[in-house]
Every structure is written in C-alpha cells, then in structure tokens.
Length: 73
Image (spheres, rainbow, N blue to C red):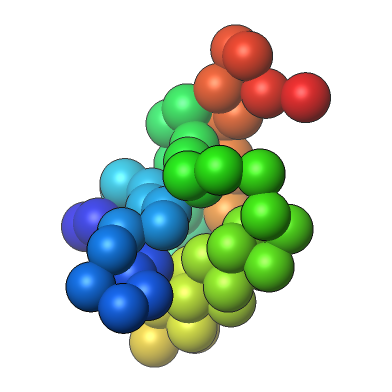
C-alpha cells in the first residue's frame, strides 16, 4: 500500500508500506527506504507521519519497522 500526503494538489511526501499478518498476533508493517518528504519543512514530515499513523491504525497494524534512506540525517 502507498501512503501519500498532498497539499494544494502537490505531493509533499509518501511511503510504501508492506503489511504482513502474523497469525493470531495481528499485523505488522514495514517501510523500505522511507518515508520520503519533499523539501525540508518540518511540518511536511509531521503531516506525513500523522497520515501514516492513521493508515496503520485503520489497518490494525501493531508494529512498524521503517528502514530510513541511506542519505537520511
């Protein structure tokens, strides 16, 4: 699944989220090399994380593992 955050018709960030069921334990999520945010505005990153949290809550994921991009600070 892809989570994308847009403002005024312009994409400001996104992440590709892989979901996996773990038997009776529920679901876990994995983001490879992301999330990615355009620009360096902190509010863009916070808005994208809020979008990801909402998505994970709706999918009932219990755990998130995110592998950040190599050039992340």
